[in-house]
Image 1: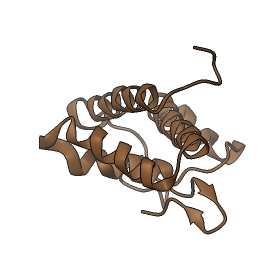
Image 2: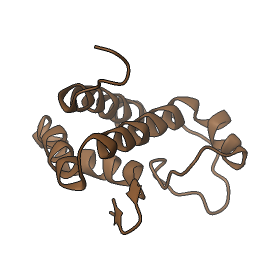
Image 3: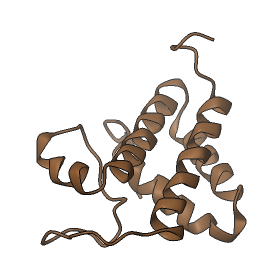
Amino acid sequence: MSRTEISIETIEAALDELVNLAYELEVTRPRPRKKSLGESAVWFHEIGEPDFSKAAELVENPTGAAIRQAINVLGQRLYKISSLEVMKSVCDRVADRDPNHSSWRVDVIDKAWEGVGEGEDRWWP
């Protein structure tokens, strides 16, 4: 499979791994960190194009920032090869892989995918 031929199933499996890592990082072994004014208590918040204003978060929580960005990239790729309806189905299936934490998993994906799409056809939590 070439880099441009990524299947929905492959994206779904990678997304599941990333959400598992996010759960381990945030819930299983949370670490104390300094919070700046106005920072969300949950580090899975709005994502946009990478910019240098987020450098503080990258320094304070490089693993969380990398996971969040990777989930966003998978969402962008999934949108390009499918639709918002397929994205919703993938999100639900990934959440259902861990029924005890499904709502938390949806929330992580939802926040990371915010704004993915084009024009009016965008992912909004």
